[in-house]
Length: 290
Picture 1 (spheres, rainbow, N blue to C red):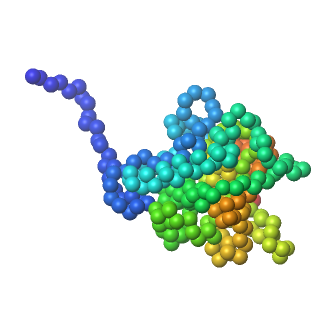
Picture 2 (picture 1 turned 30 degrees about the vertical axis):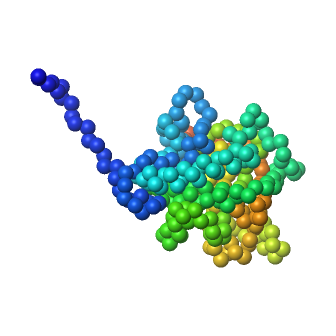
Picture 3 (picture 1 turned 120 degrees about the horizontal axis):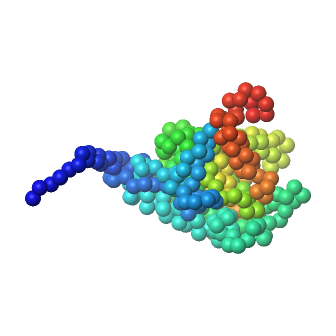
């Protein structure tokens, strides 16, 4: 029998084996989503997602994933956190995909500026904290450029890896998590985590406000602020039910309408950067130069 080959080059097979960054075991890597696929659907025309940033628009088939982060054992750990957290978030209407046909939260006590507070009761907040710690670890451990703002000391990253691997949410003052949710339905989109600093009003009675550096994650209408302050400083503050997992089964969540949210403003800024072809902070003058 004669075999014909019409100039076809042999396809190279990439080696998918290596050291799992979570379990520290050798094995075959699997594609691991850095943000849960179930919470990263976006509005838009046609299939796929538009990735917009710093003057470029790209089309993606899925949300961000890393093909060289974890092996199957590591992915199974992350998937358990994702599955448990998504059920909790949707049960308490903390994400848009848990609202059904509603366009706004029905149980939000609003103030004059439209902001509100929700106090929720559940025995699984510590499980939810593990989910956010796993998101933080993924973002800090990956080499994807979209997650480059999530940087932490090596000793913190190693401590975080062990906590995520072993399912240990403590100490609660180590990168504590607080939540803000959008109380009205907005445009579904994906947003890579960013590093920011905010001014926090004092809640201890000392009369001294303070600046808090944090990592900001946005998922399906839910914003998680993960504090970057030293653990000793967080122990002094002790926000209790404002921190996920530390409030005796209670969790207080800030609710903000989409129309007056920082998330909407972030989207407007990104669109301006696409139009200009570069980040606004590089312009050199105007409100974004400082």
